[in-house]
Picture: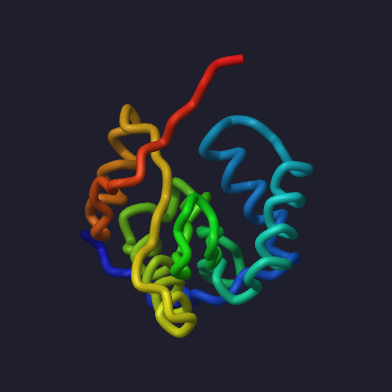
Length: 149
């Protein structure tokens, strides 16, 4: 696998990164959703401003991970890290940027006393489950449940 681009910089998320995140998401999903991303970015900046990270190459946002520390949710009293959304610009995949983003988030979580990180994933998304498995995620005792309305 190619190494992280030497000019890559991982840093905490800033509200000025919204346009870059919108662009990445549009490239991945084919949908333009600026309102959704503004809402999500601002939510994470309010909750835990140093947890979420972006990757830049030559001043351009090419990857992001939105995360925070939570306690008291889902019956879990200990602080836990939660990874919600992330994406890497398709032109910059395969350069370990996802790993670099995750390592920065993990360092922040450790500084906050977190001992485990959780996320939810569609088990049919083999690309996503493959990436998450490659960075160490394993099935959890927590089980996602839903009911159609």
